[in-house]
Length: 290
Length: 169
Image (tube, rainbow over all chains, first blue to last red; front, side, top):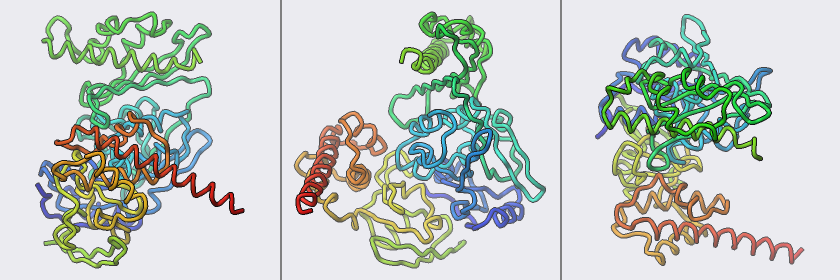
């Protein structure tokens, strides 16, 4: 199918984009790479009256290191993270995550700001940026504000962004030199959306056990989920001490599922999440044996 | 209709087109410029049959708005030329890497980008790199073999050229 007709604008500055967005009101929509929005428009699940294309705004494509991390222009493409054409302050997590998004042709257009604004919990950036405690800088005619990604995402295709607000930058804090991270994405074919996706980060002790651990899970609910209960189960242990099946119970509690009431499909999904979290932990421990 | 004007270079020729704001690059190329080599399969970015090069990178023409290509340099299968394209076409034909041909233009564009990159890839890596292009006939073996071989021949040709050049020094 084809997208319904819309007014198309391609501003060249952020100021111009914000003016167009303000004028468009509730019927305006921002497009960057369009790798999620164009399919939605082609299927007529999204029918904006006015589309403001950010691909012509050069200032949204620049990135720089800061004393505490890095700030990436909102329209930095996944490909630029993958091939480290922008600085990496996460010891490889950002390039690793980017390389798993869709296919090369998708990564060449899709953007980090667009993915966060789209808010699909089965996509890479929402979970990874939540795990890294990244923040977005948003601008509107009313001013600018900084929103932690953990507060930005409200659910499927829903964020705290107002209709006249634009993400201009994504700020990622540096990982410390001793921090370890692991990520695992479970999907049937390379490039597909995840059936489950987990990021583990934290610090290990001299024996390789988790001293501090933070676990994030994507694709389980309508937004990335912090797994506090599972973290407690992992604390002081390493993945070798824990079979994935032992993570099922705390995971169910973290996701908010009643183990005694779920059907076989739900049980299978839980098992999948447990294996995914376990593999993320194992991946994070890879340097201990190196 | 909300009309826009788009200027772009397609296969080396400059074009100025008037079209609707909603027009994708794929529809502009097929319907207005008559370049029907790229195919529209799914129109949601999954099948890869519409893959073209925009400013040197493979992209989905079905998920790229024509307006976003203002000032861009676009190459479609009709304009895919040069030694790497010849190697790839030759390898596709010898490996039987196509049957009905619907996916082939997209396969060649994605494959061409890999061959040009000169980065050695094993069979598994070629499969992953080509996973954004779906073929419903061949079962992929021929395609993966053809892309892998064209890549190897591209690398070998470059090494041979460098050796000759060094000898002449």
